[in-house]
Image (spheres, rainbow, N blue to C red):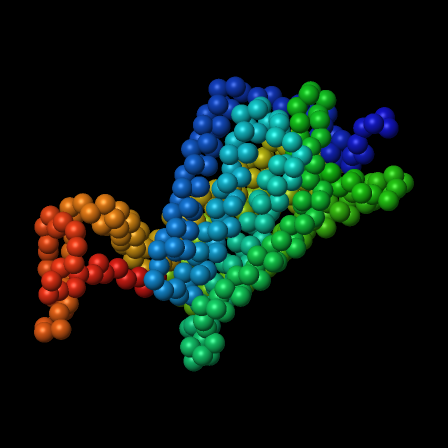
Length: 357
């Protein structure tokens, strides 16, 4: 190897040699679908964050769980356009080393945090069923925020190795590969094979255990809590989206010594990663089942924004308002074409908007 060339692990060296036979028409379809899914995921999670983060008059433990899941999913969906650009460039990473590290790190960060929060939600449900008095005393919104913050810290710690070792390597056909280079920061070349194997094996096994198997075991052990359909579906979707990726990452550990296995991994691991990317896109759909009257709250939020805009412009509105008076009990009436231009004598008009998510 020339002195000017970067030091590569044997597996990565083989991957730089392999070409990829692209079907242009099929690739365009994949890029188009991926682009639409990216846009949908960003809009969905932004809506969840807007409703739960800015439109609620009060919070519950459940809303804190869902808000934190939506936040990490939103970060992940923001990275989807970068992956779409990679697909559009015939599977060549043209966005530089920094974005290569950022995109991969957020992908793994979402994986670790989502697994942590789903396990926390399952334990929370279990305690509600089997330890109701304890939950009544200790379960709180502040506690949910602390556990969520711990999940974010847990994700950041476990994501650090992926940020450090992610790098852009040029392939022999001229395309650029954004992948792990476990040969970075090695003390010497004499132990290249051993150090690459140890680093690769450690990261693959740790993410399989910490971001998949252990959280799933915790979740499975909490199923006696009779979870609602939305909560169970969220867990099932998480397992189905991430299982293929985790399996192919384990298969990749043996790919260095087997040419057929390497071809299998190079073909199917990117597809498995794409399936994993669907998890933060599908989660917002499932939030509607885990949060009572979620769509009702969205309509109320949109309606409130519209009402406020009209009131600010002193325009005519058609509302249902609550009229209160010191002489009688509150009543609900319909007012048509009300022009708000000043104080109303004798009554106080208030737009009522409540949330119990």
